[in-house]
Image 1: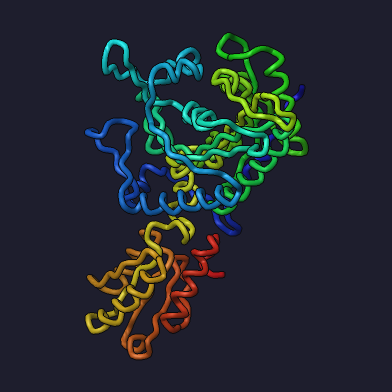
Image 2: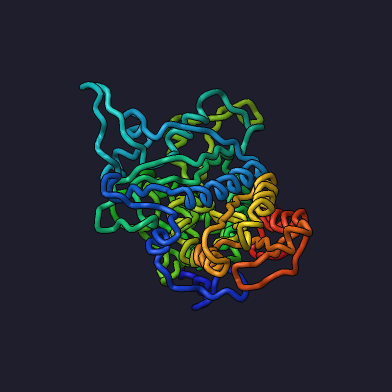
Length: 425
């Protein structure tokens, strides 16, 4: 089959209207904005999320969990390591061992491994009790840790790490449900990407290549590939031989970072193999035992790679809803500090991330807020303090007329609550 063309990413355009893409390095911005820290004592590929980066990440995590809950996903927690037998059963030791850390041996007959994927544990969730067709599709989601011993030469900031925080889910469904399930996942990906400011570069159907690194037979692969082709009907995509997972074909949603490099962000993978390996079954409407199909999916891939991309494509000026610091309150002078503190408490009571900065000249503090990409600076001068007002300055240079504190808090709260890409509704 001939490949279809990928939708091109428009050069020089950012994810929002009238925003230019700035070719920046997220590692440099990460240091300047104090988002994350790479310390030799922590180890290569093991960055530490600093308070600013952690605040932005937490907002994104909350959003993803909320989005998934509304789509019928059930969230679980599972351990980041498991017994050797678990990964033998899943096929990872046979087909993926080179991408796993060495085992942790507690005794001669008891070995544990850091997991390279979450699917083995989610298969254990499915088989924790008997299942009925009425429960399908069963959507199991987790933002979980996994580990891969990436070579030092390919590690870089947050884009390639050894400890991975994966937005992951496994949807167990009947084979006749696969098409509708994949279509719903694609819709969910579109919603998440629009909220975050992600612009897909295109779709890729990743297929088997030559060699023996794949499980299953030709019939299994043909069924899975055709199901994904049907799901992509009407969408532009390319086919890429040799890019499939060892257990099945996948749809990869590609992005281009600030430097124009293409990489995979979201993915949908079809798996007939693991349900058989784990002997997963459900009771169908006729009372017979049936085997589910497993759909692996991630809306945004790893939080690390996502954050590297978002930092670059937004040049650190994140949308207000997940900006590390959303509001800075700036009293013009010492006499306005008390009134500014009342403003700070009002924003804090509304659930916003806010700080009061009073040292230095007002001009220097405004410039520092812009350099830190803080969306809003609430300036309190003598006139504003006397009237119970503030003047709101936006990081894009706009200034709003003085307004009541409650109105200013409501304005920012609405932008954040609606997860708007704009600073004003």
